[in-house]
Length: 385
Image (cartoon, rainbow, N blue to C red):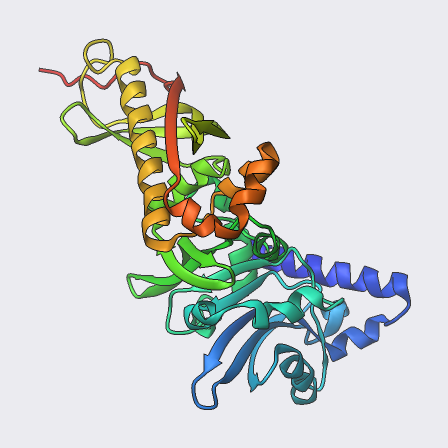
């Protein structure tokens, strides 16, 4: 049984157990239900309404036959709730929302504001708060779900698996809808969401999660690419894995350091009458690749690589912070929340003008990288004569 089939079976089993425990439905009624796997939200330009596309698990023969597939259904309307209810009349089945894994929102809708399109999903008792949220870089969000036609898999489940594996890559944030809404409602924090696009290789199209959509209040105002995202996650203390590519002394990419762990501390202080944010990162790594025959005991010692890696992390963290200050004036790092928690009296004075304060905020970064292992070998490959 492949991974997708296993997840489908798990969903059906959970649904069956739920129904049997509650007594609300019985097994035969599962045939009359469509289990929602994921949702894509777009703007329908024809009537300026919202278009919702639902990816559904089709339990053709019910639990007894264990036959499953997927269906796609799109409908437009004024509100998400009205669309969801209208879909019942089209499918002839109840829509079961509790096992949905992904909600994909088009960039066009995201730039207009998301409160109107996510309020129902967060409020309705049949939906769950741990669904992953994405912003589509494609023309519309439906295109991402449509990949199930070529991949023959339930795309929403695949996206959920990508998010579970993403901490090992570290090029996109992992955001559930409850966390997104929490950031919208918390003073001193701004929301982010992972970007998803469609990549094509050898004629095969696949969804790729890479980069970050940046929000000011509920409106998307900009993007970070995958590399910028990695260093933004350093600041947010959200780095659990990934790779650092480090240059040699001549500036050529030579070393691959696998991130084993990272700890980031953010400390607001007053320096000479001015608010300053101090960011310190400590990253433990393993040396997993050396694209050189140079001896690691001379000028290119492990200590030298560590110093160069620390300087690179520090430089790139500062660069992404400056970009957020200069281009977007939105505090995705939670510096304002840190001020609120550490020096609340100062926050009361700064809260109302925090976007302006954030833009001019003095930020100091220090980064240290430790190479604590060199994998299976502590030397480089030596070429024979």
